Length: 74
Image 1: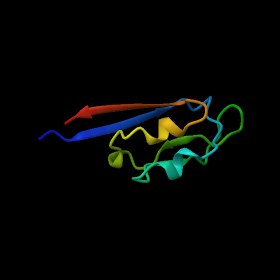
Image 2: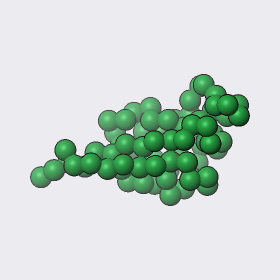
Image 3: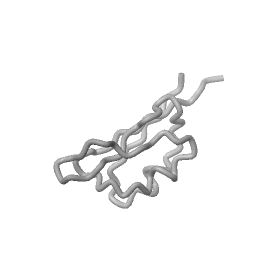
Image 4: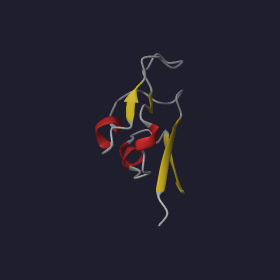
């Protein structure tokens, strides 16, 4: 049986760093960066990429729609 592997892409320049996606992730994949984007916000990124299943919880709760989720079979 094929395993589903997910990945997210965050538009770092549009992310406001609200952090809503962090607790929405059931596998603790997302964290806020210590770096800041052009607007001075700490943006979200994949801290633990191997844990992502592509569940889309992060993209669903993102108020600005800056997270894109990809799913592939391995």
